[in-house]
Length: 366
Image (cartoon, rainbow, N blue to C red; front, side, top):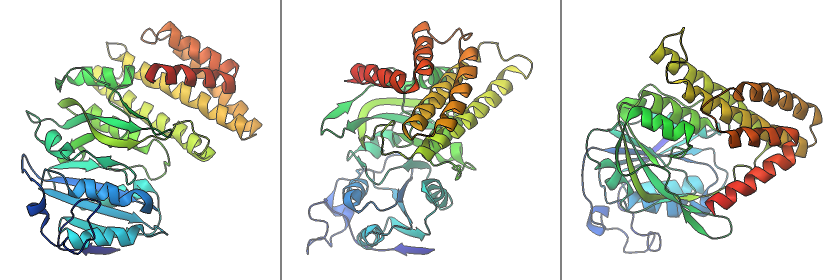
């Protein structure tokens, strides 16, 4: 493992390597030190096309007290060289290099080197608004987690912004769970969230999962968080990849099913702890019902992908799993009739049923 800490500055993306780029970063941008240090963890793998834009947006944050951990996960392009160039320009940047092991192993390495009071995770193909960290770290109160919104940069070049939560301010613990699990708000990823380190201390990412590993991490954090603050401002720029894209490997769909099973187990353990092992129906059953609904649809979508990949035997197995789950979901009071009918349609015809659901989803957000 190599650790490289350099000196100097990072300016804008356009003049980062110009001859006069040697002045200190603190002299080139308006830096405010609100709250405590924020550690930013960026897993990097073959991201040379987007990496400079990403790193310039982090190093150019108006919140100056940053620790920026770049974890190169065995890149075969120029990503590691780019990371080192930034470390040479900015003393807040630390570069770690490791053999390729996946995004979870890269993030786990970053978690071992945190010195900040807060932790943020950024994907190497995305970028931040200049004041994202300042605004999130400076939210009132002592929240365990701060959640913001994002600009979604679509493949067709359009940009969307979705408000997914209530009005700005602290959000009650159970309201957070309702918004996240039942309404699908706040986003499943890490990137629009700022975590207090004490909330996630001892956490790690499941390195066996290639997909939805971030959702499992966020689920565990939300179940533990006593206070959450919602900031309805788009502060993160996310390059959107269709979650049902043909470019996503079939094995990733299979691991998403496993991830959702682990999410179900985490939620069940939480409900049992809150309500007592003998009574899962004392007001919190809707959390588990919502998670099981998502699990059912994930199994159906994996079935769909198996059919498209001509894996008929596996597709039949997933279809049977979905049918059994659907029988249970049919009795859930917290799941609407329309959602239940979507599952029925998808089970009858996994390929066409899911495609109809996707068109309705696209129309809703479009």
